[in-house]
Image (cartoon, rainbow, N blue to C red; front, side, top):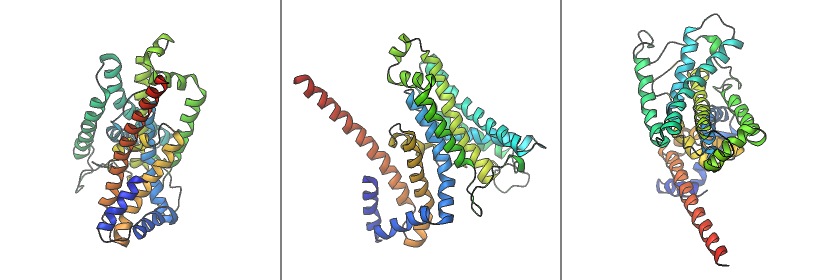
Amino acid sequence: MAALLVGAGLIAIAGVSPLKAYSVLFSEALANYYGFGNTLTKTAPLLLTSLGVLVALKAGQFNIGGEGQIYMGGLGSAVVGLYLHGLPSLIHIPLALLGGFLFGGLWGLIPGYLKAIRGVNEVITTLLLNYIAQNLVSYIVSNPLKEPGAPTPFSPLIDPAAQLPIILPQTQTHAGIILGLVATVILWVVFAHTPLGYQIETVGQNPIAARYAGISVERTIMLVMVLAGGLAGWAGSGEVMGLKYRLFENFSPGYGFDAIAIAFLSRGNLAGVALTSLFFGALRSGANVMQRSANVPVTVVYAIQGLTVLFIAVSLVLERKVGVRSQESGARS
């Protein structure tokens, strides 16, 4: 709300009614059939990548590498979609999704191993691996996988049997959003009702106590980083298999970085991740319409997203200060 209020001030400075601009933004993104389809299309990668960030946070790990994991997941699914032929969709689609999960999971395992075994800070490694993955995909689609005669770097079309089905006719809304919702439900079950979920949360809350309880902290850290990378990899799989049907360079518009804000904004709540992903998806979906209809620059929407991150950070600091003061007053009493 604070970000939207400040955003309203930016819109007013641009000489446009904030009420009109927000009305256009959210009505077109959520109440219009085609706009809502576009919102779901943008929500799918945000949701999957945010789940990856959240899973790592549950174990006390900061996965800043969602962007790179998206690129690697897209690469994995593209390889399966390009080099396997003659398979029915019921087999080809799961194999392509498996390829995306494995490639993204491997990209998550690297910083997980370095943190668990070598003690290297995962924030640094995941962040730097983003640039390696992005440039690796750029090289691959510019050279070995480049479509012959293509004016810009992109791969050939993947096999039709590996393409995700469209779930809303006459839109680009593909089954990736269903994959994200199913993954959300599965993770809720894991964290609420399984020993694995308890193990992950115990490591995140107190790794020393987890060791005394017989939990392998190192193995848990590597496991959650693989899972986090695989979930973000599925976001890349959806972009390749359901939206573009080929691998492009720079195909992610920054979903991996938006996912960090979404995961923190949800405060560890899986339902909150789904709703916040929908909110960010609506912002991205309605931005261009708002520019055309209300003459508000798209950059205002990106400013609102940045302000959201800023206010999240402020709220965390304030909560910590209030918690410390309450503890001090309790000790005095």
